[in-house]
Image 1: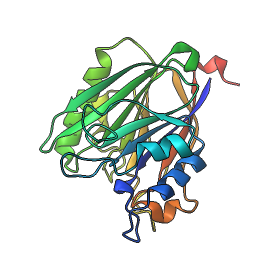
Image 2 (image 1 turned 120 degrees about the vertical axis):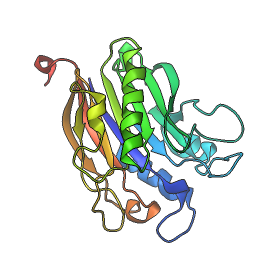
Image 3 (image 1 turned 90 degrees about the vertical axis):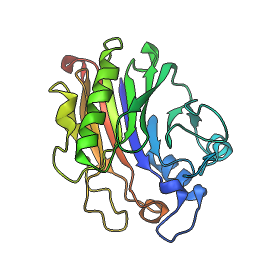
Image 4 (image 1 turned 135 degrees about the vertical axis):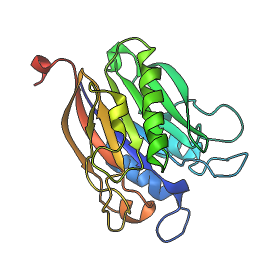
Length: 236
């Protein structure tokens, strides 16, 4: 089975023109043509952290459903993150993973049912400081390791400018991929948004979405990865 995974830091829907326009983010989401999208910075920063990207807009203007990571109040997600899954895909379980660090951080985890690919997707928005990123990767690896064996993709804003950047804490089983420079959106030079794949997931192709209005809708560009689920001999 082939799936397109994507990650997008939407910067609370504030574009490079300093205008908050959720409809631009929705236009980018539709253009990605992804099956699963992990989003960062979906809520306003201050409590009660209301949604910056309106749930009603997503439900009305896209083919995605919003997974229920928000625990209470008006938020769209948890620790500013949520996951969108294309309608028709069946999700079995979701989990929230607390991450260590100087500031509150968390990862979100969803497992698709076998008929929808049978994969686990983890979304993360990691710390700015390398020491804490390493600890957070280790915490994600531990959380995944406590669950049933399943092909796993970890996507998100890894907040790292280096080639490897602490992801060695995931262990040798995960392969790290940087689809390309995604920050800052107007003239990207840093590959901050990345994906790590476990055995059972094979990268077919990946890239950065540059088309309008992505160049102005947020300070990050979205990244995407087409993956094949299964062993190498099942590839078409």
